[in-house]
Length: 594
Image (cartoon, rainbow, N blue to C red; front, top):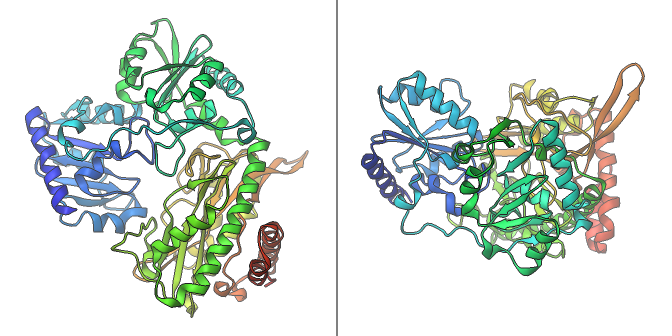
């Protein structure tokens, strides 16, 4: 990989020299500001060799750096070796940010270039302002992927789009469009331009296969009371979908026609643009009045309706039953020395695939054995996959896409002979996980106000974790979904009934083991009083037992023990109808009272 990336890096620099560019920033995203992207847009990966979902490359004529967060420090260090890139760690004291590095390393009058399709309005504006302050010139038209990536660039995805039945979605597309436009008008705009693939899929009740693990399709959507246009490659549509779009008054236009369409909008029209999601290039094409605001689709999509929630609960039952079979297989085969981390993923897909509603995994399974568990977003390869043995910890973070819901669960288990340190650390993580799950909080509470509940037991012993505690989850959509989250960083979005969020504290001991425990929780209405107002709480959606062998009951309070026992009883009661007698006996043992 390193030899290829060095060659690719030099091809980029040759193009920079030809165009008089001194530095270029290459993000790991696409024109839709997606987290997970099609291979067609992975120029950063092509140039650097780094494949994580979060990371930004900065290249000058004689230096190159890759910035990423704590989830990928170990992965990036390995992938960037001999690549010509230096790893820079985000949010680490003493490490320069991209902006600081640019300021320190570019001379007065230097040209900083980006591909404006890959940068949001707000991000491009911040870079342009940075350049202005520091005597640099900013260019946002550096679209050179076709010229530096000539041999093996993947084609733009051409998978077929399909309709997501209303029996799963719980609401028709016309109803959703009306609700979106009502919010647009409330924000004093007449129309909205939507580039976010998950928002388009949700609004139109359509799904696709253009991005691995996320059932979305490459497109743009324009909505107003008078006109609705979907910009998409025609090859992706069959007669059924064309008929469906016609029936909901959505016209179809070529994907590449979007810029010309936007430039032709009347100067008298007021359009809503989300500055964090609409690309700088497309925003510059507009010559009409603009309202900059967060997309109302994100919040509408985050609050699930009763049909979606009922489907998600059923999906959790089928998913839990599949995991029973996976973990039973692990116990039966771990001592054979024949299986590795990748085999765990393959078996997980096999067991989940027995459901007729299964449509693939929601992300690549993280099966991290021993020291690999300490790599937060570890991704096993044929070369790196560790062979499992009958001792040590195995962290399994996995999820699935079902037509009626999306799942995401992490369990850490011992394969044998757990140490005192492993049991101690596991129980600390479990205590934080339980504390967040049982929280009751005033309506209007933000995730950042709850995050410490999951960390406090680790903090008390001088430990922590660098990732967030919780992310939103879509409905047969993205496993990572906003606008809500639970993390230390401030986020103004409040947790509202109907939102599904993860609860996943962890602790990671480099070179030894990693521990993470994750359930998905639903925000529901809690207590109400005339004096103190409305409260919310969480309903735990995920159904699978914790590893009893790793629980040190001496560290638990009676309340925590009761919480675990009640949860385990629910797990058995909900999953047993899906299991045969042998599987029920296994689950009964795993869920017996502490």
